[in-house]
Length: 278
Ligand SMILES: NC(=O)c1ccc[n+]([C@@H]2O[C@H](COP(=O)([O-])OP(=O)(O)OC[C@H]3O[C@@H](n4cnc5c(N)ncnc54)[C@H](OP(=O)(O)O)[C@@H]3O)[C@@H](O)[C@H]2O)c1
Image (cartoon, rainbow, N blue to C red; front, side, top):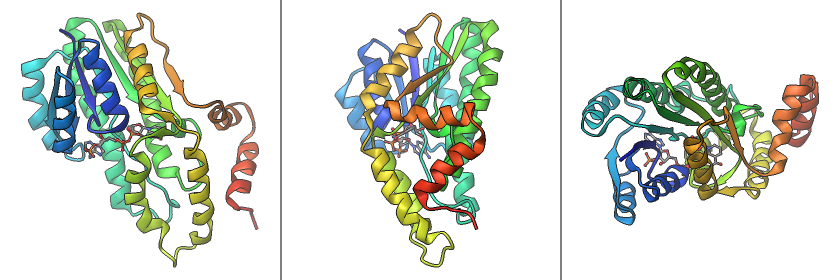
């Protein structure tokens, strides 16, 4: 039986992916912090083994992953999915929160990758799916910290894809636009204290930001659609480097960033958020 390791399995994309993989016959090692959600997932579908793990704690990753992989490895599919968003101006973002976000969205993911690679190399096969975002392709005002974590993930994945190639291991980026999950609520928990600070120099722009966030999230796809793409990417004998999963509109900012001078996208985003220059 093939073994998949899925992070962020308690909710949203990770939960939908775990169910789909179990349905396709994988044994799924499902990781997250919330025990009750993991247990309900395991109760819903057989073949899912829940493991409680906080990805902000590198020592916990070693303590929990090493015996888990010893017992159930080698893993043939790693879905690096856990992550969360944060909004607010760079100036307003507390450094402890910035570090915590990078710990979950980037460092833990590299750590897990290092854990599964030796087994994949020995088996001379494996797939690593890194869940990025359209925010990893174009950065927008007050989303800079989250985008920075996803841009970094894109860069690491591009290098890893070639490093892993001689060993028969595929590395794939899945890049969703807005998805109907708990993402917005989780982001609000971190961001509301920043966005609600009346003394912030950016406070008047944050209202426009909130309107834009709602407007964007009206154009969401479901977690099941993203899970389907993750499955498709993991089963392909020659997977693409990148899979975009979103409505047509979200092709626009990365396209403008890539093929036009920076001022073009800057002007559109500044107009939308009322950030005109002096
Ligand atoms: N939803 C979107 O609009 C969207 C768009 C583009 C990309 N994405 C990406 O998709 C991925 C999944 O997000 P989602 O939309 O499914 O959001 P979600 O419903 O909030 O799920 C996030 C998952 O990450 C886990 N997680 C968060 N912090 C963790 C920590 N410290 N340790 C262990 N697990 C942790 C959560 O589990 P616990 O809280 O139980 O630990 C949860 O299972 C993320 O990487 C996100 O950046 C989402």
